[in-house]
Image 1 (cartoon, rainbow, N blue to C red):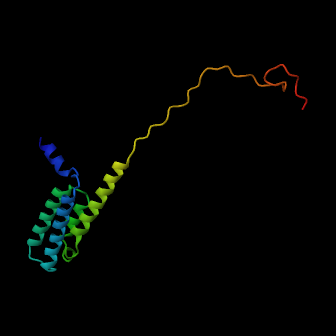
Image 2 (spheres, rainbow, N blue to C red):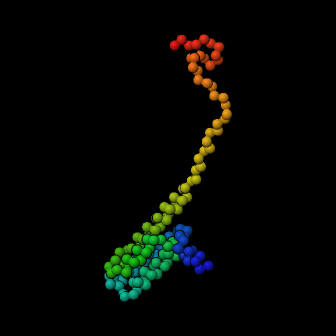
Image 3 (cartoon, one colour):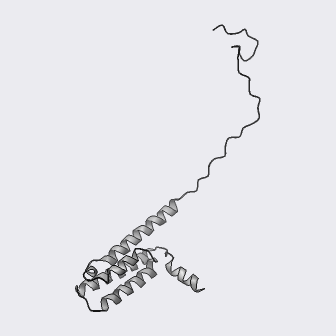
Length: 141
């Protein structure tokens, strides 16, 4: 039961316009707050913003591996001045949409059945250069 709940948390969520807009809004707000707090930020507040951004983004669009480096980069000074959350969310949405489009475009093609060979008498090769009806004289050429 617990494993299924955890697995659902990491399963990619179905991308809807609302989920994408929410995740993008969370990312823009998180990056905006970090820039507004300045390069030094308030100790602890910037990290709380990052944790909240990670949790809300994961709930909105599902877990993706690209979220981890973004989360870790935000703990380095001055890196939090770069809009990494916004870039990461845009990248994850683009990758998921491309993956969904590729999955939808996948068509199962089955090979056609091989031609059926019927048992028929094969004609013997014409060795004497005679016509197939065997009533005419041999061809002089």
